Image (cartoon, rainbow, N blue to C red; front, top):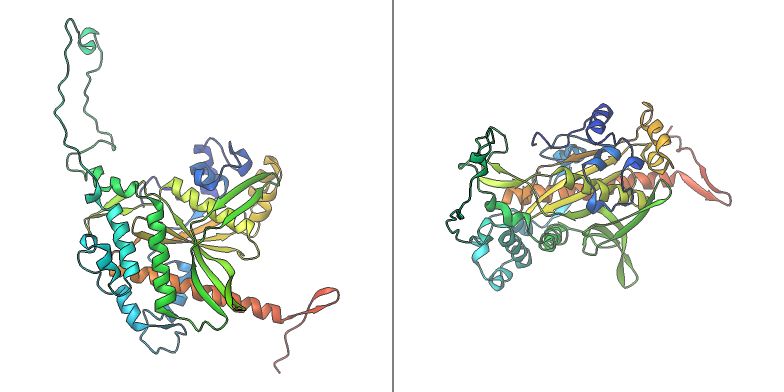
Length: 419
């Protein structure tokens, strides 16, 4: 992680960073509280109290269950894996990438097995590939010297020369990777990336994962969903995602969306890449501004959809052909903090060490869907998110079974005696 990336781990770190952010400590100190998440900045990370864990190869909340129950990584027939996969489709997805993907006509790609995905991948790879940059020839520029012109650096005693050597860390070195090599990735249209992620989820959920389809089915959610909620009881903020993963339930002769927020997709244009010496390629980096926008989508969606989202929220973040996974968890007192009506009460709340007013985020590295390894890691995460929600749903049903409805509402019933 670059040294200037946001890395608050504790409430004490937040207090330190607030001094650097113009003493912004709580939400109501922000200049524009109603600003949409797409315009959130680093100040919002502090005011909305985000604590960030170091990047991991696999999301920690999913790792233990993945290690024991992943049908992709475990041998076929393992009793601990209850998800069933179509092994032929699995081999197609995580096997070799078709050669010369970017040079084939789209019609030829579409005729390949599962060609819809390869065509989407080729389109995204082409839009984000350095070769897609058009390089204009540069003319040699000569300085125009006008008659009677006197160079000010020579005319004014003690003036600085027009060109100076520098030891700045921002100095451009002739051996540094040319920024043009990844300019195209930064400017890549987000819609191409969204289409790629939806295609990948269709491949994973509708072809690789064999679902009974009797009552419920997990599908990609193609449609964007808008959430509108209030902060401090009077500032309305609106967030719109780029699609996601959803449970659908059979209803009559068709299907209806039952749970739209198993995960949300957020596609952003990359504005930072680092050069990986091992792969000799560029890898996206989540900038502080992009992290703030992910946080905004998570907070607003969570606050505005409490019937669906409890204390955990997953984001599938994508740029170009890269995808990473983020998990947000909200402190037990966070909702109360956001609803407080004035700055003084918010400050009092966050200074109370007995209150948990923070949001916690874990994230993976970026996986490149152009590589078999990247597709495998992304598939493991998608299936693990489905299993995580199924476990949560089962636990909620157990709690519901311990409640009976009477004319006065709900009354608690003790669990039956096992003796």
